[in-house]
Length: 45
Image (cartoon, rainbow, N blue to C red; front, side, top):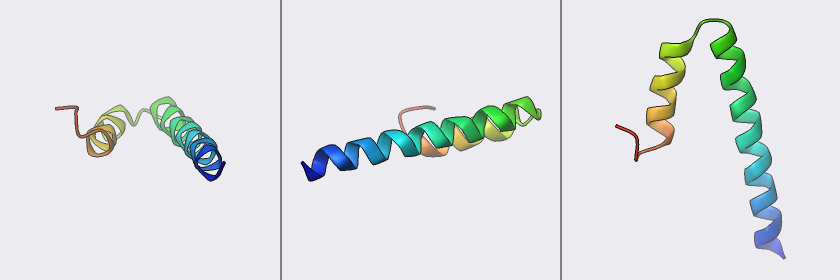
C-alpha cells in the first residue's frame, strides 16, 4: 500500500515537472529544458 502511494506521488510530481517544462518551452527556453532533461535522465547523452 505505501509503495502505491509513493508511485502516485511520483507520477504527480513527474506531471508537474512536465507542466513546468512545457511553460519553459512556450517561453522559448528549449536549450535550458534540454540541458535540464539531460541532468534528470542519465541515459540521455
